[in-house]
Length: 191
Figure 1 (cartoon, rainbow, N blue to C red):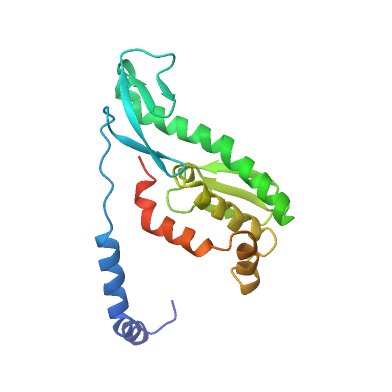
Figure 2 (figure 1 turned 60 degrees about the horizontal axis):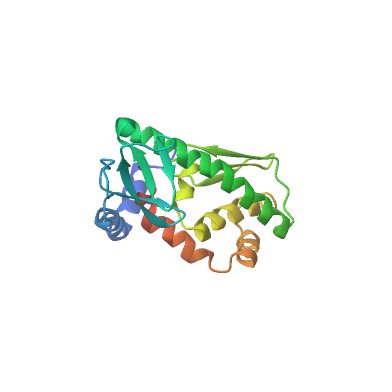
């Protein structure tokens, strides 16, 4: 708030090429298509695409058996059914991964909560409560694991210091490629 406008304008001028390059980068990313919830459409789960098949009847409105099966009678509620399914899967899978990695790292956490966050994949509170976006259940398991390790490392190091990244690298040596996957493919983790 106290920075003179001349200083701000000078900084923007000096960084203009970088700003333009980042804008081009974001604009060049492929856009996720609007889902129509019809047979043949694909949906991500743990990094793999699975086809949706609309069926006349099934044991439940939405089933997953190496493909998503949606009953025609519930097609108008497809988005809500898929969201509920993804959230349920995230609620099962992510806490298991947290517990497994916590043992490996020697980290202690208070709780695990699954959130609706769209951009913030995970967070660690002051009291070591961990939050994870359910959207991660769509990413490859290695990417989900990176976010889990990242947040667990915050239970030990509350910053992004060299020591923090060293802890992450100990468990997840290729964390940079997993970060890049998230950056490059985040647009796919929405329905």
